[in-house]
Image 1 (cartoon, helix red, strand yellow):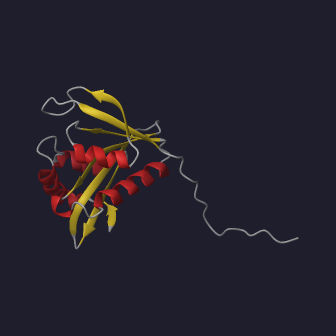
Image 2: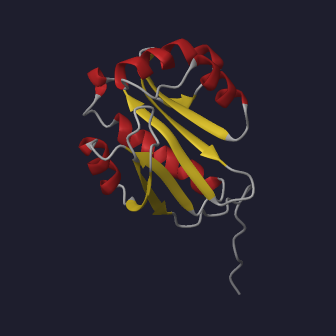
Image 3: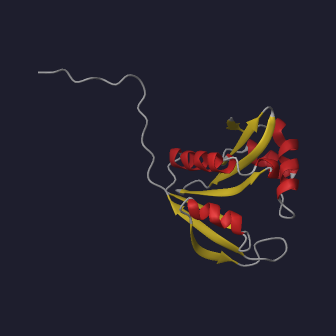
Length: 162
C-alpha cells in the first residue's frame, strides 16, 4: 500500500535514511518541516506496518516544475517494484498539480539510480558542482510530463439519440 506520509512516520523515515544514504540525509527537522508545508508531498510504501520506501516531491509556487527531492527503498525490499510504484505515483501527482516537467539530482557514480531514471525517461541536462556534502557534483536530470487530464465530477451525461 502507498499512502501519504504522516508526522508519526518520521522515526521510520529517519531509519530508512540511515540505511540508504551514507551522507546528505534528511534530518528530523527537515522531515517535520516538509511534511507540514504545502509545497511538498511525501509518499510511503507500507507493508505490514513497515515502511519499505518513500518518495518526496517538492513544488515551487508559480512554476510548472516538480522536483523529486528524494526516493529511498529499504535494502531488504529492493527488487520488488517498490521504487517503480513510488515513481509512478510521483509522476501522477506532479501531473495532477499541473507540472510539465520533473527534475532531480543524482550522483554520477550511482549507476543503479541512473539506470532506474533512464528507464523512466529522465535525461541529463546539467551538472551542479559541489552539490553533495562531500563536494561531489550532481547530475541534473529531467523529464517532460504530458499534461494531466482534467477530471470531471459527477455523472457523465449521455447524448440522446435523434
